[in-house]
Length: 363
Image (cartoon, rainbow, N blue to C red):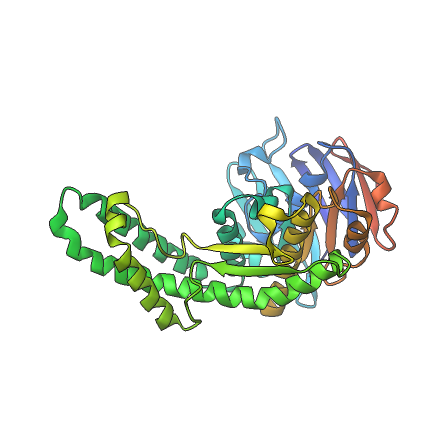
């Protein structure tokens, strides 16, 4: 897919913007001028919430009643249009027809986003990496979000029972019921995660090799079920065994120690932990490679080529890595924000947009 143009009114610090786009778009300017606001507006058309964690009321320009966002885009080999209005509630329309909810846009408009906040995928704990893989799977597997809800419901119920067992030990036999539910749903989640990593890894390796000029290699390793096979029934059996082995400690700690809610995805650079041993540039490169691999896999599985939104991606990268980002990402439409004007001089083909105080100065 490709976004041809956008119209923005009263969004963040942007009073009004109308601009066209090309395959590669560099949005540059000083900090706090509106660069990220522009790609944030684009991202909302995926039906998702702000990738910066903002609530809708924070997106409307100060002293204004609502924000209006419109795009013209190409998807499924035809030209289309979409509109989002953000006020007391958010509403959307596709090709002039109002949607029941903004999530409906996600069937036509897909994007992956890299932002400095995503560096937590490498720097922080397992929760951030689990969130990445679960969010990615929600975009390509229609039932995965419901599967997560069922698992979390069973986990909450099991943990609630564990807390009650201190006062009511006679209820211990009921653990069997929640163990069964948790293992059944958990096995399906682990299976989907393993399959996704297997499919993602070749793309990530290829992209990271390009970014590092073939000097380094990335790897991804699912941790927490190393002994599990990729057979769902085997994974379920392993989970049931883990629940049984951990039962005493689970009762003491009043929580469930094993399961996909505790698993991790280790990111390795040259066979070493990226979190512990990689430089700032390597960590940034690894997250970027994973995000671009996500876009490639999303295209393969949905037949819709997602756009890539890369916010402040150039920081802490050497010139060869910056050159790859500017001139060698050709698989999708790309939007890149940066502060340094010198960085955009190496752009061989594309459009530059200069933003100052929420207005386009040129571009």
